[in-house]
Image 1 (cartoon, rainbow, N blue to C red):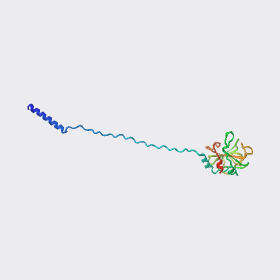
Image 2: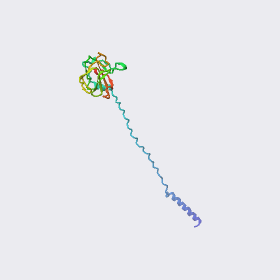
Image 3: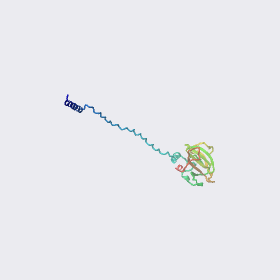
Image 4: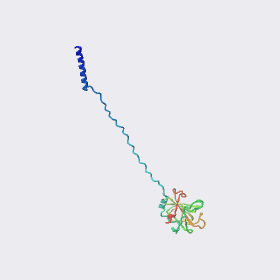
Length: 211
């Protein structure tokens, strides 16, 4: 083979190679498809607990409570009518005090009656009140106080259970009432501890008796 033939053969091989490559027999590099990565799912929002509903304050309405209890009170002096009562609850007293009770005027030795059912808590001799009685109400929430008594009824003792209308004492002028100023000093107090009968919040007996 001469040089001319050799050159022709090389060119022919080159041409064949070009045609063969053009037909795509050479593997193309793989195309990597990018798969979108899903965004992380946020955790569910925690359930919001409802705010507690504010409960109405339990404030004791003393007037309502005492009226409910003492709705059946009787005037604690025999023979006295409602129209004979005078409201002296807020009347001034010595040393800047207020009366915190009502005075029920009646003749000496008029029977003093239990204003409601209850227990005789204390029989006491007081400088101001003279001969006195502290009576605890049946529900142990109220103290009835009777003062300036002439004497106790026969058989009256501390701890004795009395019924409404029972005679427990007699009208007098003992203590600081003044000689001949016969009357019953009567008060009502709301107490939290029945054993501390001398402590409590006084309420006006007048509207409860004048009905």
